[in-house]
Structure formats: structure tokens, C-alpha cells
Image (cartoon, rainbow, N blue to C red):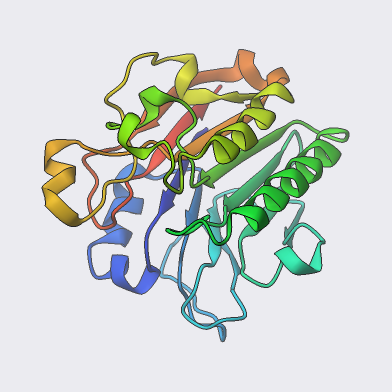
Length: 249
């Protein structure tokens, strides 16, 4: 099974940049997208062979997630059942026979770190949610986690130590997911630096590969024997992020 995830930075924008051609080319079994910025009244894409599930933010044109899946899930739920977290369309959970798939767009701590305290609460509550799911079935979670976990996960770690996305608090928050037993699938295969999933539009950073790895696929440890490959599709354009993926046997 091929799983892909992509922060598209606006679904209507990326549709103008051959998003449907991307889906047709890679033909994923499951595609999770974040930051859809879709209108609250909803939308449906022309995707033959994929069921579509959307979670819209209460604020129009903000945040939002979607899941496109060939196999129809047993059930699909939006949010994590905590009111203060569930008004921005950030989580979709699809239940399949042998696992839960969780698509997430984690809140940004913001430039002046004004949302860092909320971000820390989010991380703790989201981890509790995942571990509760894991009591029933293994969990796959993916999406824009809005943090570079280690120094090798961004091009200029020293210059960004106090910046949002690389604060000690955010890095420790992601570390809690790893300590809780979840596996960062990309780091199972690639141990060196230079592999990024987001680049600021300024300064021609993408062409120079001055970026951050902030998009992930993580899995319950029990799924590790099925993990065949992890991907960063850095050549795919259309957003300031690129897609990431994994292959399970």
C-alpha cells in the first residue's frame, strides 16, 4: 500500500497546478492533505476510485484536512473530541480493518511564539488521543507536524534554535511521540541531513535546498515489520511543502 501526505497550502490553488495529475501519476492507496483552506460549505474533487472525506475549519479559508482513499474505511471521524482543538479542521481519523489512519495538521506556534503554550497543550492531548486509539489497533499518523525534530531536520539549526518550529519545547513535544513508541518512518531508512519537506518562498530557498523536514509518517512499532519504504517527493511542485509517503507490505 502506498500512503502519501501533502500540505497543499490551499486545495483550490494546487488544483490549478495539476494536483489531479499528481494523484493520477502516483495513484496512492491513501492520500492525506493538510491546509486545504477549503470553504466550509464543502467541495468534492473529480477523483475516480477514491472516497473523499473532509474536515473544514469554522473559519472560512483556514486550515482544514482531507483524506482520499481507495478502500472505504469502516468509519471516519473528525477531530479528537476536545472542543478547544476541534474547530480548525485539523484531524481526520479513518478506521480500517487492521489499523487507524490519522491525518493531522498540527498548529503552528507562530512567529512570535504567541501560540506556543497552546501548541504544547495540543501535542499532549493529541498524543493521548493516539495512544487511546492504539489500545484497539495499530496507528498510522501523518501530516504537517510543524516541527523539525532534530538538527539534521533543517538546514540551519543554530540560527533557528529560538524560532517557531524548532524551539526546545516543540522538539521535546515531538520527542514524546517517539518515546511513546511511534516510529518516524523516514529515519528508519535515511540518517543523514539534506532531506526537507518545506522551504520558505523567500530567497530561492527551495532551489538551494535550504529547508525543513516538518512533514512525517509515523507508525506504531508493531507495524515496523510491514514498513518497506519511506519517501520524500521533493520534485513535486505546487506548494511550499512537498509530499511525503511510505509503503507498507
